[in-house]
Image (cartoon, one colour):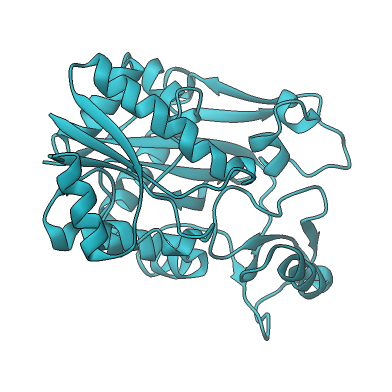
Length: 321
């Protein structure tokens, strides 16, 4: 099969979360070649005519979609599947509607609440209605992934939320909101399409080992993108909940499958949870295009399930037909 690995345009001086797209794209192409396919890489072009020409140049039969945004803006990731669908070429991953619904985090949370899926309370500007002085809040980017702006100072008292959000907007741009900070265990749940149905991979608990008492237990920007940082070195992924806590594992898996169907996800996705003091899973994020690099959490979970990296990548391509 001729597969075009389509990725975001990445500048040479781009931050690590954008450079990761190129790392993943090269790994995906190598994996497909190892499985006997022809795989080429190209940066996404926004025009219909340009994209048609690109697909024709590489005799494309399927697109591995790694377009995570335009000009560094993740909220525009939906444009790639929208154009690919109009052209009629098969592509991996979730459609434009699913990306839009999960890229806007407050919208995602409203959709989950309406469906009866537990997610922490939140508040949005300009009135910040709903902030409760009894709780702390994590101030988060409303329209981007990659943990941008998540550091030791992002978890604040309710009264400090507006100032933190404004400071974050001025520094990093974009829209910001506040989510009630849930003290508890954190889990990453990967879901893979198998025969068109969601298949839950082994679930990873994120452990914060030897963590400073005055630092919030979060998987922040440094933990994700700075391998030499304290946060990265002391954030440890652990598998095995299915064997030791079957009831909790069943609850997490069921919730992840419900979200898969609610947002019409496809290919692969990751759902991040906090388990509160009562043992109830609370959904933090629904990510329809998590990192697919060989050392990323999704590929590691697939390996726990017995899938090699090349098998995982080929599976994603075959599932898009």
